[in-house]
Structures are given as structure tokens and as C-alpha cells.
Image: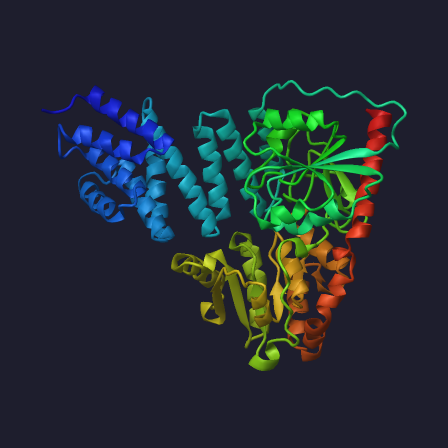
Length: 569
């Protein structure tokens, strides 16, 4: 007896609820209820394939996908399951067209789309976003993520996806359109009742209570820059409170040894977290996340502190009305440019706004005592940056360098080189720009990545999104880094790091200067030897790694912002 369409829809909707709960056995049971009426029902078979995949039965899922695809190549669930199988097998380039096809079916669908199909679309959009990003296609990832945000109905989910899309736009050249997108983030929070703050009378010089909010007091890139805030501050003049969200690990334990008050706000709503911050009477709240993963920005929308600042975790404006300041310096954001591209006021420190302190995360291996060119007989350039940062502009610079140093090679190391599809994606982009992939050594991400800097003579920075931590790590491993100074905050990270490390000669003014500097060093074994033998000591003694004067500048900034608040608010 054929099942009625209404009854079938009920089972599919129930299966959707079970999927959202993570009960995949119940999903499979729903499929079997439909199949009990019709063994050839394609929707039920597709549901069975998806449930089988989530239950770890990939072979069974693959067989059903092939069966249904031959009869209904446009079945939404089968397209998603086929893509998930491909991603599970690291066949990312095969998964993308399947996900794109499903997404287009959603765009042209007429009438009301059933909830279970909307769930399939959301799942496909999220997977397409992540897959594009893993392959270094940041622009596509940002566009899809923005579309998924528009699809999702849950307000918190919409805001989270929109924030993720904003972060993905960091990899593109910034313009007025990007600023408008960031200001659009405010629309997700509507009119919220803020915590009240009254202007203090006659207490601009009192001991200040500073709050640090972050999901990254753990083994994470940002953690390499947080130690001075907890270790080197003045205990007489400031009280420090840390609000930590998310996973904890051995690095988290090390951070907790510092003299600060710790509040684990994992699992709390943004409003509940804001309530704790307000109850601690924080004067200046510093957010170390921006629009990065695990963003804490929704907490700021309740205004738990009278002064709120964005720092370190993101390279671009938050766009958030409740964020008062953005931490920067005179190189990344010169005063004569005002606050172009930012909704926050720029809070500048006189030297680099970053202080590299890697000891909290890992013990540094010793650098090579001599450049690898000495043993190899040729120069090796390298990039350990996220490949999403490798823009067309970057590839053109690299092509110019490799053409000018004909016997040289290039190492590309990272997640892009961890799977065959990633390597093929990178090779395709290299060929398109005129770089012979035969001159490139692809190395997968590995825990010993710092030691592999011993195989690199000269590191080549990316643009317009410069390396931050990767530049610091190359320098501390004795490898000079060539960067091109751009015209945005994120494209000047390399410049502020290198100049404050005492290495202004590595900062290029334009494309031609970038190539010229790389070639000049590559053609001089004497210069290479000088860098590789002495660079670590130079960097360790520089402002880039000196936490005490760095925190003195930060605290002077805090005091200045507080006095302004007391006087003018």
C-alpha cells in the first residue's frame, strides 16, 4: 500500500527533528517507516543513505547514493549525502559542484520550502563555505556564508554566520562595500537594554579594572600575543579580570598561573556573560576575538563596560556600535588617515600593537645556524601562511621573485598541502598565474612546522592580508620575511612587525621593491648567513618581544582613554 504524501512528509519532518538532535538511528527508523510502504521511494532511500553515513556506514550510504542518483540526480538529500561522502574522503573538489547544484535548486525553488529541505540547504551551505575555505577560495566562502546567514531563521545563528562571513572577507581587498557589510552586523541585535554607566566624578587616576574577553586563552594563534596582558601589567595600578569561553587545554592552565581573576563563562548566554562583567565593575573591556571563530562580540552589545575595545583577534573593524576603540599603531593606521574603514575610534600605541610572546604556547626549537642555500646550492623561498591569504596579487609577486632567481624553489606549507585535492587546487592557481608547480614543494601541516623553517632561506609574505603569527615565527626561527606594505590595516601587519623587530629593510614599498628585496638577499650568501645566524637574538631584543615597555604603552593608553571618558562622556 502506497504511503500518503502527508504521512510521508510527517516522517521526513520527524527525521529532520532527529537530525537536529543528533539521533541518527531514529532518522533511519523514519526512513524505514516510509520504505515499509514503498521499497523504491527515493526520498526514503535518500534519508536512509544520509542516516547510514552519519552512523559510520559509508559503504551502505555510497551504494544507496549511486542507486538514487541514477533515478533522481537532483534529489536534494542525495546531493548533500554524496557531497558529505566526498568531503569525508577528502575529495573536496568533487564535493563543491554537488553542493553548488543543491544550493541552486534552493534558489530556484518555487513556493514554500518544507523545513526538512531548508535544513538540507543550511547544511549544504555551511559545508560549501568550509570546503571553499579549505581550498583557499575565501571570496566564494564569504559569499556563500552570507547567503546561508540570510537563509537561517534563528537570530543567534544568523548573526554567527554573518560574523563568520565578515571574517572571511578579510582575505579580500577592502572597500566601502565591506565597511557597509560590517555595519550591517548591528541589525541582528536590534534595540537592546544596555547596562547603565554613570560618569565618575574626580576619580580619573584611581586603580582601573580591566576585563579581557576571549575564546583563545588556549593553544591558538592569538595566544602568542596575550601573555604580556597577564604577566607584565602593573598590579598596583590595574586589576585584571579574564573572561574565557570555549575549550580549555594545557595552554589555558599556563595562563591561569598569572595573577588575574578568572571567570569561565562557557555555556552562558551573551547577556549572562555581560551581567558577570558588569557585576565585576569593569572599567575597560577588551575583546580579543572580533569576528574570528568563537566571536564574543554579542556580549559587547549589552554594554557591560563603559569603555569597550577590539584588539588583536581580528584585523578589521567590528562595525559594532558598542565597540568604542580599535587597538592599532602608527604604522598599521597612521593618524593622518583618521579612521577610514573603521566604525571604532583608533586607539594607537607608539610601537607595534602586537607583542610576540610564544613561550606560553610552546618551547621554541633552535634555528638553523646557516641558510639551507649553503648546503642545497640554491635558494628556497617559503610561505607557511593559510593559503586563503594567497591572493592573485600575492602570486604575481611570487612569480616575479621566482623568475628573477631562476634556480630557486618555493615551499608552500599548511593545510592546503595536507590532502591531494588541496595540492591540485594550489597547483592549478600556480599554473594560471604562470608559476611552474614543479618548482614548488608542498608540505602538509605538521606539529613540527617551526623546525621546518630550517629548510627556508627567505619567507615571502602575503597581501593584502599579511601574515601575523607566521611572520613572527619565521623571524624567531632565523628566516627573513619580505613583506609589501599596503594601504589598509591588515596589509600593514608585516610592516609593523618587521619595523618593530628592527628590520625595516625587509619592508617593500611596492611590487617592484618586493621583488628587488627578495632577489637582493637571495643573491648574497653573506646576507643570508647574517640573517640565519643572528636573527633570533635581534628579534628577542627588539620591541616586538619586550612585554614590559609594551604593557607600559598599553596602560598609558588605558589611562588616557579613561581620563577622556571621565572628562567628556
